[in-house]
Length: 280
Image (cartoon, rainbow, N blue to C red; front, side, top):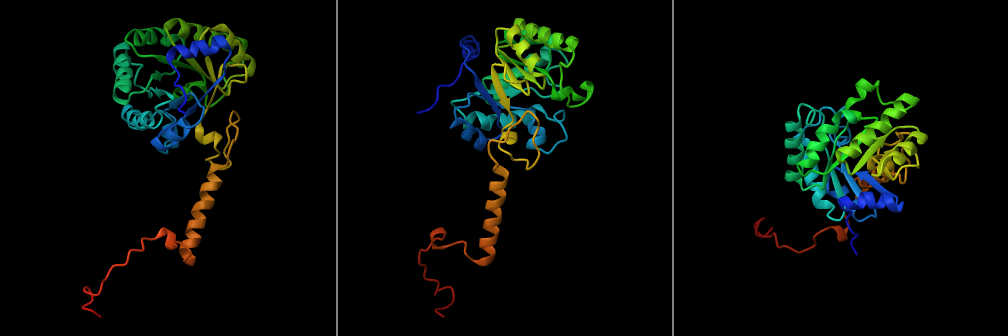
């Protein structure tokens, strides 16, 4: 039996009930369909596709066209999973008009359920306008990958009382602006818990400790698809890369020694080729 897809209203309801949920990434039809068969409630088509799917050094080179191209197949592959499309760098920060236009475009051209964008209180007015235009918005504060250069790199955020208070203030501002939830990335556990307690919408943490309402992971991280690379916030739930490499090597070996393909893998219909060779 297919799982019941979350709605926007469920996000706040889950928090009120103390029901934890999970949120992972997908960038293509196949991965989306696998996640759809699991109990995971939320998929993010993240701009992390720049690094994971396109080989970029970071996320800032990702375009609206990239996001639309990758979000469409995810929507098709995961009809029973709530899908959030990420707004790429430069697609919403020029003006409120630009933000509404591009957020509306991502939803209209892909069929995703909501959008996510980075930024705290400074983006509250923009978010309020996007929500008013009919687009559900998920916020993103803490470590914001699109602006890592201004944050001094990929570093834990909220490590001082002042910066922790700013994250709490940002979360409150985003809630007031109309966000249905907020991703909080790479902060101390105590800060994650404090931010979650400060607002009535769910805090979806990636590297934010156990005291938040939802746990977020990049699927390729948790499945061990990068070999030995493992971010501190990730746990390997499987070693998929090794399984895949082993399978490819077995295929290569069997091709070389002639044990593949077998009769079972071949089409064995008998065809009379004598006319081609003049009856010889």
